[in-house]
Image (cartoon, rainbow, N blue to C red; front, side, top):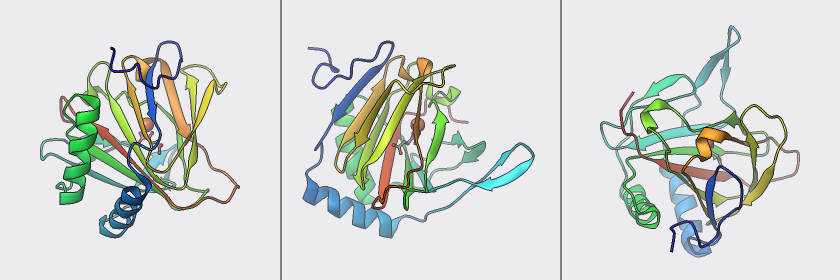
Length: 200
Ligand SMILES: O=C(O)CCC(=O)C(=O)O
Ligand SMILES: [Fe+2]
């Protein structure tokens, strides 16, 4: 059986696996509380069209020492894994059947925090990168569109305790976003585990 057979989202030119309840609610609650409290959150600035803007969310980059990573136009040196993140990484890597040496933590404080359209296709991730996204806290809508198109083709609610695995050609053909929303939503933590193949 293919690794992607259990819960496939049938989107052409993509390999997506959505696993609701991947971690049980009680344990997910503990992870959320601990990570919100332990993480040295930062709000980096991005330089866009001649101006600096704070990214609309808080972030932290954890990883093996060599796992330098570029996002929002900046090179980030990883924070060392905490015991909790070491355990979460072990379980996510076992689920994905491959090593993972970095995790980007995104903290969406409310519906005005967001992430714009992008693909996780940085050169340091290599061809056909696997990105495993763990969702804790308030559910948010995750949209997918083809590169070069403005039409949202698929959306899913990323729920507390769910794991979304994106692999294969997904990042080559598709972009994703977490849009702002006026609906009330609880704080949300998203952890995207990655494998940096050639550090920035
Ligand atoms: O918060 C999310 O679900 C998406 C995060 C994401 O796309 C990323 O970290 O690259
Ligand atoms: Fe992403």
